Length: 75
Image (cartoon, rainbow, N blue to C red; front, side):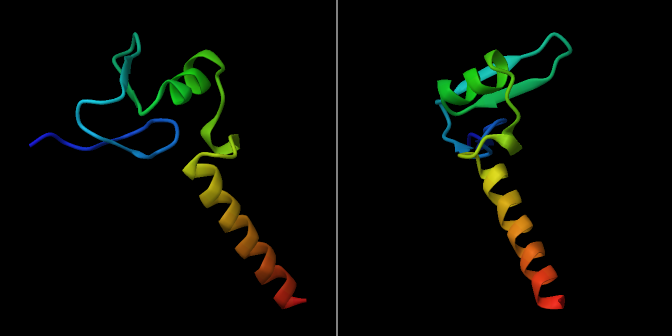
């Protein structure tokens, strides 16, 4: 049984037999679901939490909105 991996940039699941694996010089393995994720992280050096379409950015936005609502309710 092949294990399901997560993309290192957008954190989506990668089906077995697909995607791209990048190994750094220090031995760290990065898995990417698409070439779009690979280019954003490796070539363009973007951070997942600041890229709007990634799951990490969406989840952090939800957290910020919830904390803003709580602050409004307290006032």
